[in-house]
Length: 290
Figure (cartoon, rainbow, N blue to C red):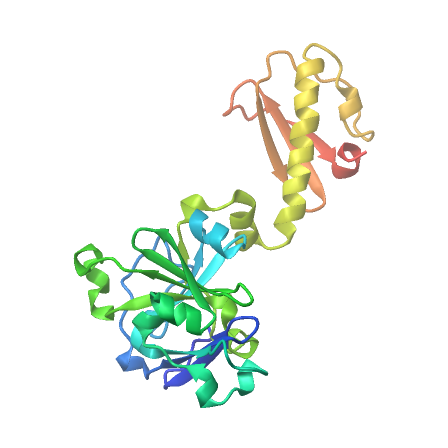
């Protein structure tokens, strides 16, 4: 599996309008702190590169989803010492990308992560405290959400992360496209999966096809629910495939439903109990979606 370079390299990114830019300078492999093992959160088994920072995550956290305005957030987590921000001065004119040094501000990391009033008045940097110890920074000009920083005291930091030193999260979507497309750049961890939206988690596991199949399942559940409500003692031949020789199936007392499906075909199994393995109905998809 392709991995990020083992030699030192840089990543660059910023907000939509370029009033806030940053450079991440990643050192050679041996200088990158190790990430503690957590198989339940690993997307794939770590290799000698991905077992070290940066940690690239897919975060299902409800707060991060709402603050970022996205169905799922991706974070690039790294030591603060790797990153330098450059902020456009509010008094500057013209394209921020071509601004002179006099038109820009290079804050320290703490000046950036927890900007005071002077910094916010001087530049387009602003922030929102989503909780007592958490600061999320934004561009006040275009609205881009850029970073997440938790100012927990050292005693609150997991012992397995103390050797990282001060660290923070950069919103992965703010990296320039060329770096998102570089060989080896990919998420390696999940976060807060219990907060995830079911169809989003399914989409990540199974791809776009899962959206079509999930719709198919919902249609089947709806049709079978109608059947059980209104035809409990009647004939369900209207529900069967026209190719079936048997035109009648009794549904008295049936309480459980199982669905086995593939892209072209659905099989519905009705039974008296969940473990019942009696033969079910094989229903062509076209007969359900009429």
